Amino acid sequence: MKLAVSPGFRALLVILALLPAPRALARGDGGAVDGVSAEAAADTIAPFDAQVTDNQRADTTAADSAAVDSAVLVAQVADSVAADSAVAPVATPPRDYWGELRANFTPENRTYSDIKTVLRFIGPLYGTLAGLLVLFSGLSANLRDVAHGMGRSRWVRVVVYLALFTGVTFVLSFPLTWYDGFAIEHQYGLSGQSLGQWMTEQGKAAALGLFVLGVIPILWLIYTTIARSPRAWWLWLGLGSLPFIVAGTLLGPLVVDPVFNRFAPLENQQLKARILDLAARAHIPGRNVFQVDKSRQTNRYNAYVNGFGVSQRIVLWDTTLKGMSEDEILFVVGHEMGHYKLGHIWTGMLFASAFSLVVFFLAALISGWAMRRFGRWWGFSRLDDVASLPLLYVAVSLVLFVTQPAVHAFSRRQETEADLYGLELTHDNDAAARAFVKLAAQNKTNPEPSPFVKWALFSHPPDGERLRLALTYRPWEEGGPNRYLK
Ligand SMILES: [Zn+2]
Image (cartoon, rainbow, N blue to C red; front, top):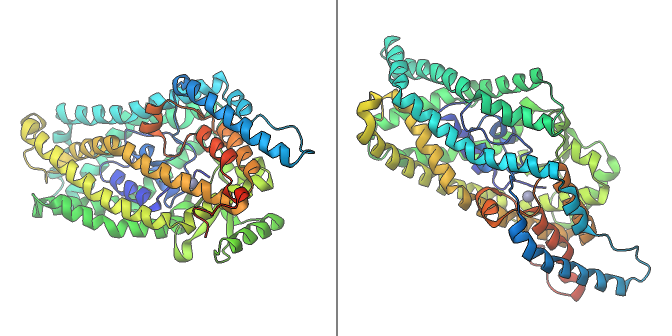
């Protein structure tokens, strides 16, 4: 249900991520992303996926804000419980959702979550330092010399340089990639994958990035654009990324996702009937609901909606189907339908398009300035020299890191809207509350992170906020109008 906002945006990040180096340095957390096109790709290929994916949901100790907040929260819950039991005297004793939510965030989970938080900050920093190392050591100029020795065409030079640079970044980033994507996930029981399976997926992702998504032609195009238009290349590249954003959103579900997992129509016919019934109430044309064998990679819960037109689909992870009850799943699906009905895929693509112009503009400013200042040390004086690749990579990474809070704020807003939509559609506050408690426990995320960590890293509202909403939002009981479901 942490449906990630914007498929288009992820598609963009895949592209941006591919520019510099496929298996890049700053790997984010490899966990359950939540929904987007190119989900698998972004998750496994994009060095910047950390900034987009969802359950990066890293956290820190949240004692500060939680202490004040929780008093209010508990009071609110008590209120609503009281109201409930007045209406229904035979109701079973009220469940202590807050107690469960907090008890589930065990010391072990807190440690996991703290480690992930630190990694989310270290990743981009590490990537930047590695990029600078390659520049200042003169290694990038050396690799460029080798590439230039292989031929005169830009195409050959780009291919050779990219191959060498990819090897270097793979080695430099491997310890962090392995620790973040494999070791930690195993240590805390979030993945049952063998090292061999994991490595195979890394290889698939790299191959997909290089050959299918066309990183080589894209890189060639970038350098050709920089050479032809040294001043306005950022504008051309920003505009040029628009078709990729659209294609990524459309093709991600059809082309990229099946490389990593098996998708099949939902098996449970009774559940499927209830989902289609929900869809009818939301005025969504009956579409197939898919299940995907995510349990191969993770034990986390997730669901997402992605694609559009013929590729539009709701996908439930098999982990979710196994771990959640039917009414909880229906709320999750209602949330996904909210994304669909509220046009989040489209606004996401618009946002991504505008964002891509901003990213290229700032990256051009930074790299131009840095080259004038340090180019002598680095062994190149023009940005269209392929030796500048680490510089472009560092510049884009920095811009993405700095703009990440704005992207997350945009995403959190859409997630809250989808939560409210799901509640308006199902009127099942209790199932929603149970779903959030389970989600927080299974994904080992901090339900009440500090405001700073939420601001910097959370693409979804913290589970505590979502639980509060689930327990208190019920305008239909007072005959009030819906805000989103019309
Ligand atoms: Zn969502």
